[in-house]
Length: 158
Image (tube, rainbow, N blue to C red; front, side, top):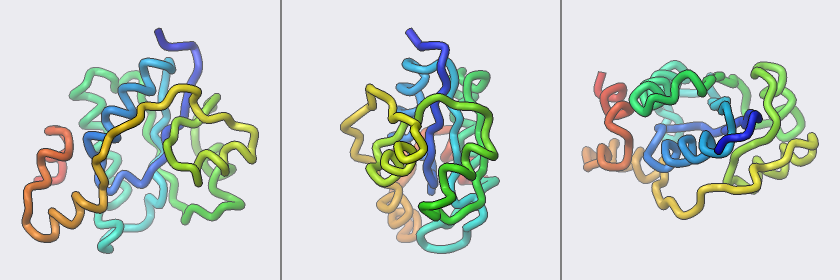
């Protein structure tokens, strides 16, 4: 049963994949609301960051709609470069209020902790999907669709 709390779920989401989707659904089993913070939203058209912030927004929105959770998800593009001294304060300034962070990244967890924001006490563990592998498959013309939600594949195909 979700608490009456809100978490922020930060990531680059290059692209939003099945592991991200599972984590978002899990976060919403714990929290009333999730804010998806798209980091580095201003960077695109590179091997590491091929999708624009707007494309990533559309991927996440399509997934949330497909899952019937859109009313509990707020998506906020964050146009910064993960600068350790400003990253969390920028997310806080651009996002609605949140209580906790939901992240498996030790880097993110440490930076939020510095600002007194705790990581979720119960994280989804075990997914093995890696966005870097998906990007490599895309570049090589391989089968990447099985690693992303159908709604996300449809956005990418547009």
